[in-house]
Amino acid sequence: MDFNILTLGCKVNQYESQAMREDLLRNGYNLSKNKDKADITVINTCTVTSVSDAKNRKLIHRVRRQNPDGIIVLTGCMPQAFPEEMKELDECDIILGNKERSKLVPAIEAYLADKAVLVDIPEYHNRGDLFENLTVSSFGEHTRAFIKIEDGCNRFCSYCIIPYARGRVRSKPIDALKNELENVALSGYREVVLVGINLSAYGLGEDYNLADAVETACAVDGIERVRLGSIEPEQMDKELIARLAAQKKLCPQFHLSLQSGCDKTLKTMNRHYDTNEYAEIVSNLRAAFPNSSMTTDVMVGFAGESEEDFQASMAFVKQIGFAKVHVFPYSIRKGTRAESLPDHVSPSEKERRAKLMGELVEISRREFLRSQVGLTEEVLFERLRHGYLEGYTKNYTPVHLASDDTSLCGEVRRVRLVAFMDDCCEGELAD
Image (cartoon, rainbow, N blue to C red):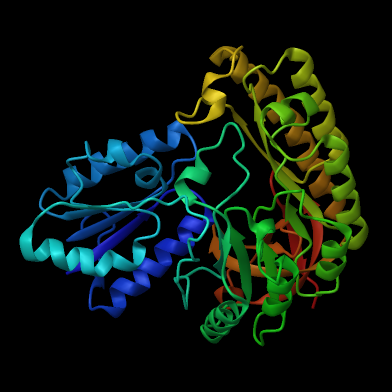
């Protein structure tokens, strides 16, 4: 039988989908040659916003239309966060919670035997939950591999459903991480990205932390670059930053979650820092990592955000000078504390604020790209598209090189950055 895996959401989901893919292949299933049709379709969902849920449902409907007799397996954050609602999804044959991925193959085999709908979503909020024992050895045709080292979140931000979908913080043991990294290196990957739901909480309650994970990754032969996924600010103290800076393979690019540049809004969101603390962390990172880039996410129109609050957030974002910002309007998330907060902002006002913030961060983006012109940097080339080789520097500056030499894909070369365009720098081979 053949299968497809469709993934929505974050890099953690991408890692978990790859682990399921390898599990299916090991057990004799074949990857479908048709991306729209398969005997089995696994849908790995995201539920970070209500819009995500709508995308999940739309995808389920499309897959069922395209595969009327196929098996649909639903897994990921949506069924885990809303188990009761999943009973209404009669288009799905197997529904698994977020810690039942290891049961994927047995669940499929059980369904094939008796054609009985299977729903397995156990409670997922226990402090004693263990880190899910998933591993990957490759990442398809990608030039970098995502390695999940942490799961869960203890923060309970007022707008966020993810702690209910992912449970409490738990971490991949260092020995297991080392083995997985060695396997990925043997598969030829030059760059790895360490990812998690609350990555900077890695090792919480254990005798290791994020610096130990980075040091382990940097010590693996064959891996030339180590990159961090999205991190929360408050664990990034000076001691941790100093240990990270000692690792020359660590890429100087930090996606440091902000959400708002207004202290009042941050408090309402139940974020665990203020703008002064955030700015100090950015300053410490920039001092430790020359020519580093800072990227982030910013939400506009959160419940109770006044025009004054919004302008404060705009001013702070401008002050930091991010290399790139994902701007998005707040949307009410069922099951969160923010759902019942007063003074929700109108959709039209949220749209206006998102537009203004987007225009601001676009200026910041171009200023960052301009600052890279004249530098010579190492670029990992990923693909050939429209007559250009595309790749990234260590600080994640996108680079286009006019060439059709596909032998450079997957290679690291020194490149002079000679100009900048709308969303990248133009480069020339330096040697």
